[in-house]
Length: 447
Image 1 (cartoon, rainbow, N blue to C red):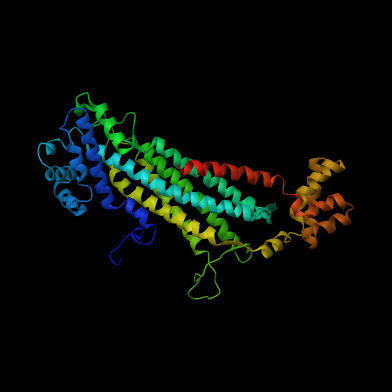
Image 2 (tube, rainbow, N blue to C red):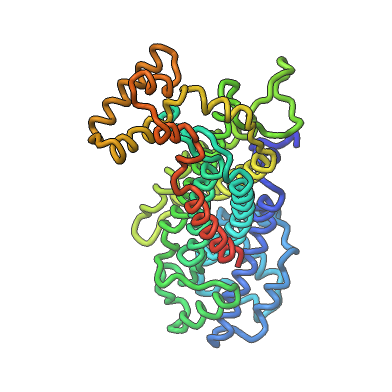
C-alpha cells in the first residue's frame, strides 16, 4: 500500500464495502444501466430486439483504465462509456446505445444500485451491533450500577438498562436506513430535462422496462437529475448513526477511566509503546474520531440540494468524494463497535464500590418520596430537608443513613431506600419493551 494516499484505501472500511465503491463495480453498473435502457428502447419499439443483451455481456470486460483514458481526451466519463460500448457491439445495435438518455440517467441510476448495496451491508453490520447489545442487556439485566447525569452520581440503574437505551437508539437508526430504500434507492431514467422527450412519447415504457429489469422503482418526476434531498438524507441518517455509535463509544471510554473502572475491553492489544501497564480505549477513540469526519461531510451533502434550474454540475465532484467516504467510514465504525461489544466486560467489584462513593446520597430521591407519601411532608419541604442533610453528609463525611438517624428520621421504611435493588422502578419491564421492539425491527430489517 506504499502508493496509497487516502487511509480508506487500506486502513478503514472492509473489503466488501470497498468492492461496492470500486471503479470496477461502478463501470460494470454503468454498463448494466445502459443495457437496461436499451432493453426499454426495445420494448418501446425504438431499437431492434436482442441488443440489450449484447451490452449486458460487456460487464466485466471493460477496463476502467480504458474509460479513464478516453474521458481524459473527451472530458466526459459517461460519453466515454457510451462510445466504448458502441464500438464493442455490431450494427445495427451500436446505433442505439444511449439513445435519448442523458448522462445522469446512467449516473443516478447507478448511484441507486450502489446505494442499495451499501445500505444492505450497513444494515447487516448494524443488526449485528444491535444483537450484541441485546445480549449484553440480558447478561447484565440486573447488575446494579450508578446512573450519572451531568457526569455526577444520580440514581441506581442496571447496566442492562443502560445498554437497552443504546439498543433502542440504534434500532431507530436501523428503521431509518430501511426507509431510505423507498425514497432514495430509485431509478432516474427520464432524459435531458426529465420530460423523456427523446423517447417520442414512449418514455414511460422505457423507464418502466429498464427500472423493472434493474429491480428498482422510478422516481415519480425529476429534472435532469434525481432530487438531491435523497442523497442528503442518506448522509444525514448515516451521520445520526455515526453520532449514536460515538455516544456508545464515549460511554465505554468514560467507564474505562481508572477513577471509574466499571468496564474493560477484553483484548490483547498493546496500550502504549512507552507505558506497559496501559489498557487504552483506542478502538472507542477511533470510533469517536471517525464520527467527526462524517458530520463534517454532511454539510457538503446539504449544499448539493440547491442546484440551478434543471441541474448544474456542482454536486458531481463532491458526491464522488462524500458518498464512498461516508460509507467506508461508517463501515469501519460498525466493525469497531462489533469488536468493542464482543470484548466488553463489567467489573462488578468496581460497580459495587462506586455505588457507595456518595455514602448513600444517591438515594435522596427515594427518601424524599417516602417522606411525602408516608410522613406527611410536602414535596418542597422534603426536597429542602434532603438537600440540607446531603450537604451535612458531605461536610461531616458521614453516610446519609447516619445523618438521618441523628435527625430522628430513620426507620425501617426509610432504611429500605438503601437497598438499591428496591429502587430501580420499572427497569425490567422497560428492558422487555425495548427487546421486543428490537426483535421486531431486526426481523423486518433482515428482509
